[in-house]
Length: 445
Image: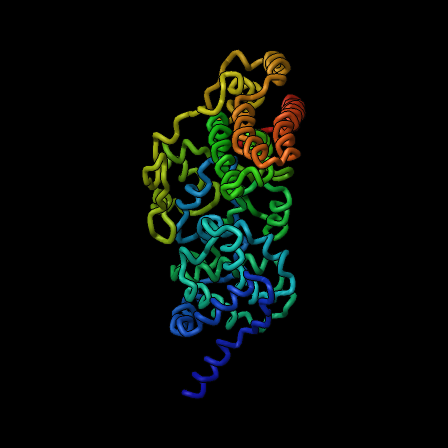
């Protein structure tokens, strides 16, 4: 018996880890974390082996992607699925890095990828991509070890596929949590996050029956809020020296990104549904019942709780900590938008307001009225652009002039004009696509 136990322990820790960190900090961090956790992993393995008996990782083919449209509560929605006995979802935005990671490290074996992925996600997005801020390293690694014991002798071609990595990553995380699934093949809820046709296509190639859930918000509020968020991100990336960074571009980013995200991926319309941010706050019970039915999972009580690994998901709203539905956060806001800005959005996105059941002016329903309004207002700079221009002038052009960096300062003065031309072109093209109904908004659930 003792000899058998020793043989089993030897096999358990026989995962071949051959990568050398060299100058790659991701690989260096992963290798250090892996070796440092081995003693703790050994203690956890018996429980993970037993738990794996309740899973069929290669048979986990039910999958859904979660995408956002500006600031529309995608993390809040994902948090409602935490703890569901028939759902496995990586916390926060850890999952959004899966396909990029798989393509970046083709030299790694299937097992090395599972070991390295958490380090890659944390390095890429330290705030919302760190798997181990939610789950202990040893728990996750013990899940990987248990999977290796069962499937380590399979052919490399079978193990190295993108689909298998996706399945095993979710299985390793599920084993790490210690929760027993309701079925051996739970739904994998994946944070694609960004509306990206290439990512969506890869996902459907791997899981032909995949579904897409898009979070949406009142377009007025969504663009207004996204402008604030983009301003914050641009200034953050500048590291306190925006005059030495690329020109700040939150206005064009806020408007044009929304126009690119408010419709389903091409060819995937039938399997895509939109979930309103406001319903998450004002009518979460009814919303989650509909969503559970569409995803074909049980309407479990956990779908009314905003948590990650059982702990409340707390966010700050106006500096005040909050968890779960917040009706006050569902009101329309437009502090960055002028009246003309709102008219442009009402005219351009009229179909969105009507399809998604958001209030909009009735006089804009005739197409000719909307086209006439857009033809006049497209020449007028948006209030967002004016704010953006002031930001570039005050935070970039003036400091550069003081440093006698004249080329940069002159470029900063011309930058808003170039962005104005870009926004006008974007609005014109989008108007054509929407009026000819070649671009339709997401269907609301």
